Image (cartoon, rainbow, N blue to C red; front, top):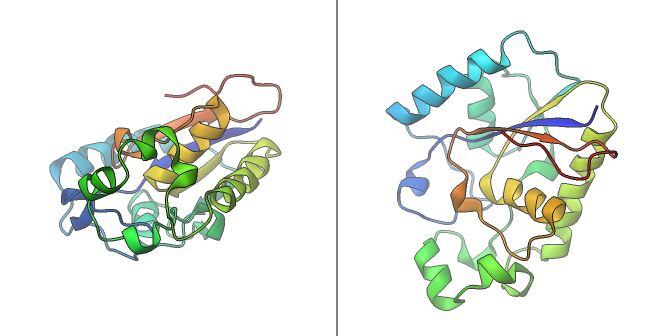
Length: 186
């Protein structure tokens, strides 16, 4: 089947400040904002009655908390779903990243001084992609914006990443089956 249902974690205080979270283990906003609550209601309706071969989550709290809010407290933590490690850039703002490295996030993220080699990040994504491609029913995963952007980067052959264009709480469906040349998204 090869279908991935992916939910980006809900907002954190650092999302509100446009900070790079990376591997920082940050809790969700408490209480959740109106937008997150609305997304949760829509997502829960979409997920109701759906059978998943696997339900995975990033090991980071914000993703695990999002999984629990969706009714999946026993989602299996998978280190391959962890967010990109931004290294010394974590805690800095997206504006700081752009000022220090103009245009590189969107055009050549391989050249950024990250906390993990970009090739290793893509390798982690590819391992999840292979698990999903071999699944007989959809796989549900709770994770992060840069991670999903990295997957789209690999699938579509784009040069850069666009994590900030993925809303917190968004539910995205992707066809990762080997026979699919272009991923379906919603």
